[in-house]
Length: 251
Length: 251
DNA sequence: CCAAAAGTGTTCTAAATACACCCATGA
DNA sequence: TCATGGGTGTATTTAGAACACTTTTGG
Image (cartoon, rainbow over all chains, first blue to last red; front, side, top):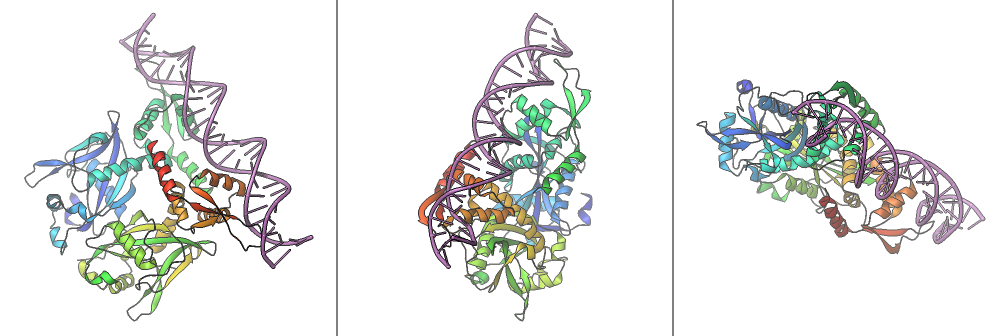
């Protein structure tokens, strides 16, 4: 990391990012490889790390997101703090963290290691490359096939799955952060089906989609398919935000 | 505090509790007086404090709730972490905290004071007395008349107001943690009206209440009023929980 | 001409809203 | 007997769910 020498880590508070996407029609989470001192891989974990001493939590989340994926303009949502003392009981995890953050974490504690982590959530496109090298190797792992992860990362991901559904209900905009600029009706429907893990009726979904006035049909169609060419739609973020403000006024 | 000598504070993470109730028909927040070293009052703040080194966040929240109000069985919900470095820019606030926690906080930091706080929320009955003496003087303050508070407590309370409405929608049970064991239909309606800050139609609310099968009419009536005696209802928590489990299965 | 997905309406049910009058009680 | 809030039903609108067939296209 470029900033490593000019910033001091706060060894008591970390941020973990649950980046979700859909890969091979499965809701998946971005995990990064973890290495020991000799550069041997020792499993997968959520992208995350200690905050800098002078850094806001949200800023730390965006920094870590960016370091892991190169993404900058994704909408991140803080969804929960995890602070059980049990999180850091595993010495191996802590030793790894010392190594990764180039900092003696043990010394910051008189007695017990204790790190509270703030978990963030985003839905994103899966086709981004890591822009930085801290995480040379990132993997999209389907949520029904997670490895055992360090700290309480398994628990964090499980909670995040519930959270993403809630969030998609309240803020449909986040669904479009997964989709490309132009998408077909069935791509949008399939996205909802995978996030909510249930089939949705084609005609009812079509009605629902028509009710989203910020989903604009274009004149473009997707061609080269072995069936009728579907129309492309686009998400109008400006319109969405205007409507949101209007709705909030009624509250 | 009894435990002060046996537990070590973690000077990097605190918990703040937003306890809400209804006082004089206004949604109100419990604030406690803050004193300087000479015992002079220097304004109001949210009940909150540093976590113990070996204490889970939820446990810390319940401890602080209990110290402030004597309450033990209230349902607390973690709703947000606040971690801007700006929170602790005001030296006076930090000096006060050192005094209140009997601990040199400054020394725990190499450079800048930095405390991340996890905010918790509860709705409760306003008629509890403080069981402990850390907060000798607690005050219910209506949310539309908040004083300027230390750290970012004003912001925390503002966010909490949105949160309590969300929460009451998702978990109607919390509304009954404000009400006494027996309550009339109009007391329940008035509670909703005050939480959501809007009038609700009497007949529609009655229908809605009848749909809450866990709100059980009793044979008791409230007497001594200058009008028809209203029936008392009670909240059946066991039934509520059973129904909740059934509903969750459908998800 | 066949396989595969696109596109399209109606009916039913449930939930939320709007709306007004008589009743029981204590003062 | 009056003032005060208690208690009650219907009609309308809205949102969501169930449900099936024809069209377009490439192979």
